[in-house]
Image 1 (cartoon, one colour):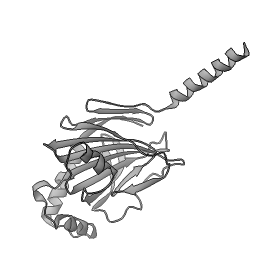
Image 2: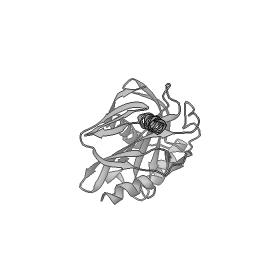
Image 3: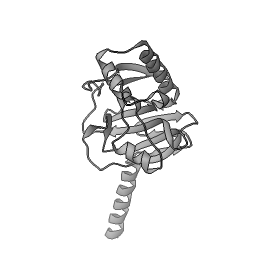
Image 4: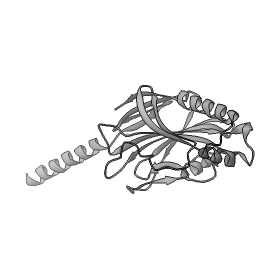
Length: 222
């Protein structure tokens, strides 16, 4: 009798623990999480490349110019022309052992743009930088799937849910320079963080920002 009771307690404990695991699913072009509550719909041109798993450490860090957490998986989507990636979206729900501050990008330096924006009625902090597309785990994940990445611009959107401050909801948008690229392009864009931006570059940046906000729609969040 005692053995049966113990087994029942263990079973209840295990069921309780499993129910605490956050549920994350991708159904077509819709990503959904129950904890933190977040649901995002991507443009149909994006395809899902599966999630990128990280080691179990709690320290968030900057890797390849994109803030990531090793505690959670990242969900990677690309829009390509053949095997060349034109655009990419990476969703990461980064968990910390403590609590995230309201603006986790406060100390990010050398940005083309940095500030606050509103996406589908939800407030996000963001920053924009140029990237070479040459290093980093996300790049490796994409290239291992048979795709090629070229230099481009990245806009990182981050939101700390009021109801669950252990998480940072992060949506990263990438767009390749494409025909606009030459070996001097990335240097030119790095100079833009100093305020050196031509009228043409301002036009390109405005189009990029519009593209980033039209690549996905936030259906639900805290």
